[in-house]
Length: 107
Image 1 (spheres, rainbow, N blue to C red):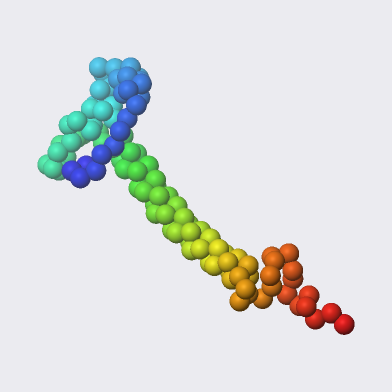
Image 2 (cartoon, helix red, strand yellow; image 1 turned 135 degrees about the horizontal axis):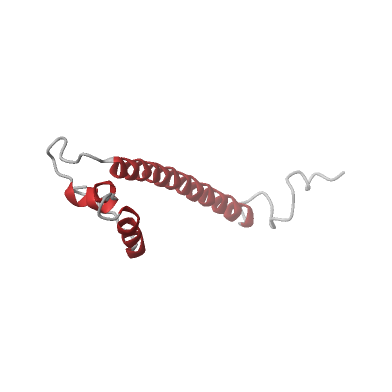
């Protein structure tokens, strides 16, 4: 967490404190986040941090996939626009997009 940031809704933090109370404070995510350090074993209970790490890793993976899909979609849209521009130009195969290839070969 040295280089990255995670934002929590205020109601989530209140719920975390309310559900864990003083007795289960060490199981609270906010407690674990604020008391973690580089010393191994500094937290006796880190289950909430582990769950958060799993969720973040999953979401980061989804963002990478979404970025790849968006890039592929952009490339396809650019290719489609180029084909439509070619077909609508004077150098294209037909003068209007409604014609089909081969329609000029009527017997």
